[in-house]
Length: 337
Ligand code: 5GP
Ligand code: MN
Image (cartoon, rainbow, N blue to C red; front, side, top):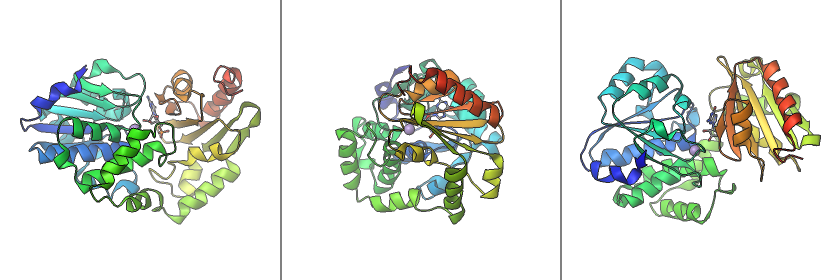
């Protein structure tokens, strides 16, 4: 993988660009994709953003979201566009498997592949050019840097700023996680200078749900949360029936994993959701508890030091049993006790 600056001169020539990101894109994934899309369009490129799956409705306000292709329902069209492209930008993921059924299409595609990502242990062999920087708060911060480094400041519009701000608050927990360093706050100031209405972005993302989602949270916190004080950890599990009963949609479970961390002394929180095709895990931690390694070792996943995800093909009951077992056996290695 060659450093990203090698592509700057090449981008002067308008071409066909595909931008993709991880499945079930979050504010950082979709925000970075749509911000980059707007900038490259302004340079004369023909740009298509392809998401491997659907996304949360609370992201639909993002400028350009209406034109994003959902690969699962546009397989033929998306595959043709990918095969005819000059460039594929891969944002906010470190391994192609994060794009689910899109992965084999990207793997075989001939366009130059560019990675822009901040997750740990990237599969750099899959990409021709790129930048992987785990010290960055978000892929949106990396797109902001890219815009400034490539001398494209003139294209930092208020619409681009809104997309970037969404990813910045998403991945820094609204500026509270350790990654929210001085550069992050400088970036926020740079975005505000475009005329960005930041309160609107917070409202779109955090204050735009259905009543049923709040009732669902009440239900799972009351009936599906287990706290293991002896290991300073907590678990929430969500059954298929819970999802059906409260009509839970993509994005409605986002952030739920953080609730147990608000209990004093709890250093790690996990959530397991029984989705149709797999059991999806999310892990969050405080301080020196490395959930990237935990997810990688026990649940086929990865991510960041304090925020990671994983999966399991086992039943909900069995994967939860595995969690409790590995928690007990590895609590001291993971500095939980
Ligand atoms: P979330 O729990 O919000 O889905 O994900 C937390 C972080 O871990 C995100 O940065 C996400 O991209 C990453 N992540 C989530 N699931 C997986 C996974 O299955 N594999 C890997 N490598 N990373 C994941
Ligand atoms: Mn991210």
